[in-house]
Length: 300
Image 1: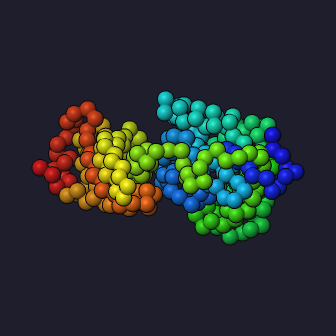
Image 2: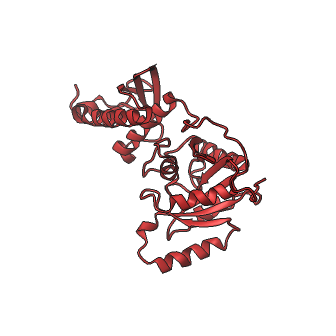
Image 3: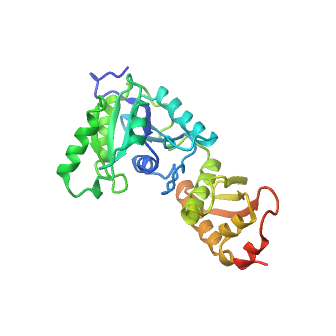
C-alpha cells in the first residue's frame, strides 16, 4: 500500500502503460527512461510482448511496463494473446498510466478504461497535446474523460517533445510504494540484448515495409556474439512467400541495405559498442508463389 507520509523515502514499483493501439505507449516509455527499449511505428500491434523499461534516480526506481495496444477487433489468436498480456499486467501494477490521444476518445479507449482495476491508482495521461491549438477545448476534453473514472491525477503531455514528462514522473512517484530498488541502478530493461536486437530489426520491417507485409513476418537471431567492445549479430527475417522476400529486399537489395544500416545504428546506440550486423531474408515454407516477383526487383 502506498505510504504518502514519507516523501523522502526511496520508492520503487511497477508502472503499467495501457491504451488502445497507436496512442504512443512505446514512445512514452522510451522517453521516460531515456533509451529506446520498446519499438515504435505507425502500424498497430507493433508491440507484441510485455517489455519493461527501468529508470532509477536518487530516490525512486520506476519500472515501466509497455503493453500491447488492447485489441477490440479481429478476434484471432494473436489479438487474444495480446489482450491477455494487457489484462495480466494490470493485476500486478502499482500504478497505471491510461494513455489517450488529445481530442480523441472513442469506444476502443472506453474498452481499455474498463479494464483498470478499481484498487490500483491510475493517472490519465493525455498525449500529443502539441497538436491541439485550442487549449480551452483540451481542458474541456480532459474534464469529460476524467469524469469517467476516479483518476489519481491528470497530466497532459507530448511524449515526442518531452513536454511535461517531469510533471508526470512527480505524479507517479507519489503513488509508488516505499521500497528498495528491485533492479541495479544502471539497468534499463529486463530484456536481453539478443531480444532487443530482434525487436530493432522488427521495427525496421514496419518502418520500411509499412502495410506491404503481413504480421506473420518473424525475426530470428540465429547467432549473437557478445564481446567486450563488439557485438556480432546474425539475423534472419522469415516471411511466408517469395513475393514477400522480394518486397523485403527491395530493388537490387536497396531496401534491405537501408534497413540493416538503420538497425545497426540503433543497436550501437543501445549497446554502447560497435555492432557487426548481417540480415538474411528467408521464406518459411519453401519457394512459394512467383519467382517472377524476384526478377521484378532486379534478381535472377
